[in-house]
Image (cartoon, rainbow over all chains, first blue to last red):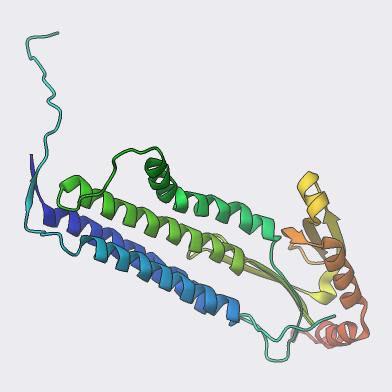
Length: 85
Length: 193
């Protein structure tokens, strides 16, 4: 089975988008319903910085990957004999 | 009694916070330690592989190598998001007593928030419930505030030092300032003959 490398990137980008969306909802809740204290701002900033660090580390790890490469995956063969009952 | 210089959404301009309490820190610690452990899990596995002399390296030239890197990244992002979400859930739950009322804020996940308030002059009875080993030693419990209205009980669980909170509520409802502020509202005519 052949899978283009770009598929991995698209799936990853979709998950990152969902994480970013929920991060936005969470930070919105802190700012909208939380008390305007140092703790709420500090925690939000730390959260964004850690997300940024994870994304940056990932980018450093995969920046040399050629996404146009097609990978061949050998799945274990599953044989079904129609004659068996 | 110490006054807090913060405000909360829905706070009236003439109000001041006299008591602000969140749930006991163990409620947060219990949730967060789980996510911190899960967040550290991939790194613990990598350390164990290094110690056990297994020839393990992630080659980003291969499909599985790229998959492992992106998989660990997604795992870390999701764990960190859940960690932040649980902190938020803890942080937004609050028991607030102002000079006029008691406000209970309960955040049940995203987009589900319950804010109840009870005027101090409506408080009839305050009950503290400390049940279990942890709550006895760590001094937290559930506080029940009985109102005169049909709203019933006003409950806030896992509150630290509930006896002190009870004393503060009782002091506030018996203070002359609270009774004075309650009287005009009670005597206000309804407008219907």
